Length: 235
Image: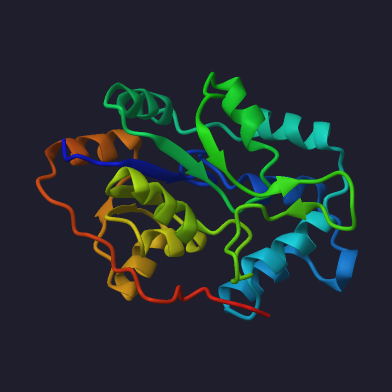
């Protein structure tokens, strides 16, 4: 195996089989808040007319259930990929730190990991707040850019302090992590995005695929690393 320094893994749709935020919004979302549906905010992000951070704030305000109710539903209906836990163990055996990164609502990750016996896995995500005027705090955002709540570019760059970084993802928000990683594994929406950005990637379906590819790899493509992230927003 190549001397990887760190592995960064997206949560929703990647380590977890589904997008938990979508599951919660379908179950508990109040479309009356703000005059728009939660899907409308997602469409605005897809059209690059709104940043992920702003959309998440609006969507979080739509959730009408208690934290306990939402966490229980997340654990019951949002399982981890069955190949993720063995992949975590594989990385740990090789001394490669693995971190989950998410730009979702954040609060559901800990109970899902705990239910799977993986509560020790490091997580970088937004913080759910029960106090204050807004439900989300963005403690892992960029110092200047307000496009994303959790900056996946920052997560990857900080992980590079350990050496070359492997990034694993599947969705549009993973674009900004993939651009700065040394080797990228992409599936679903991230495949076309990576191709458009000129990011070399390896396709994957399960974490067994990722493990097998890393064990056979002889060199790393290296990051594309544009000077400015394409998701950059300051207003």
